[in-house]
Amino acid sequence: MLFRPDLNETAKAAGGRVARVASRARRRTVSITITLLILGGLGYIAWTSLQQKQAANRARPDLPVPVLAATPRIQDVPVYLDGVGAVRALNNVLVRSQVDGKLIAVNFVEGQDVKKGDVLGEIDPVLYKATFDQAVAKKAQDEAQLANQRLDLARYQQLSATNAGSKQQYDTQRALIAQTEALVNADQAAIDNAQAMLSYTKIIAPLSGRAGLRQVDQGNIIHAADATGLVIITQLQPIAVQSMPPPPRARWPSMSSAMTALRLSIPAS
Image (cartoon, rainbow, N blue to C red; front, top):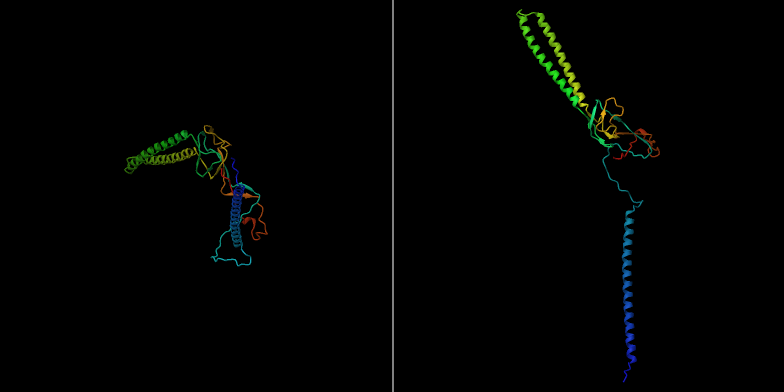
C-alpha cells in the first residue's frame, strides 16, 4: 500500500523556511543600516572638530595682536640677497720648493683643506743636514782656537806688564783674537743659513685653504727655479664677491651696496 504525503504539512514547512529567510534578511539590513549611521556620525564629529581647529588657528584681523616687551639694544642685522655674481678667492698661492732635491713624501691629496703650517711635502734632507753639521763643527773649531788665543793674550799681558815681553806682541795677539771672534760670528751665520736650508726641505703651507691639482709626484727631482711648483692653494675663508647687483631701493632705501652682507655657500670636497 502506497503512502501519500499530507499536502497541508508540506505547505506549512515551506512557508516556515521562507519566513526564516526573510527574518534573517531584515536583521542583516538593520545591522548594515546601524553601522552606516555610526560611521557617518563619527565622520561628522571628526570633520566638525577639524573645522573648529582650523578656525581657531586662523587669526582674525580684527583681534588685537599680542605685544611682548623687551630691552632695546643696538646690533648689526645681516641682510641676505640673492643674485648673480662672480666669486674670487682673496689669495691664490703657488707653493714651490725653496731648495733642490728629491721629493720623498707628499702629505696631501687633491681637493683637501689644509691649514697654515701643514707640511705638504718633504725633500731629501741628507745633503743639507751634512752642510749644517759641517758648519757647527767649523764653529766649534774656531771657538777652541779663540779660547787658546785668549789664554796667550793673558800671558802676553803679564809679560808686557813686567817688561819681559814686547808690547807689539801683545797688540798683535789682541788683533788675532778680534779676527778669530769675527770668524766665529761668520761660522754662526753659516750655521743659521744651513739650518734655514735644512728647514726648507719641508714644504709648508703658507696659508689655510684648499689644495688644487698636484703638479709633482713623489720621487721626482724638484728645483727652486721650477715654474710649475708643487700645488696651488686657494683661500676660501674669507672670499670676495664681485659683480653683485645693488639691493633694490624699494625694499632697502637706506642701504648702499657697500653695506650689504652677503652669504655664500662653498661646497665641501
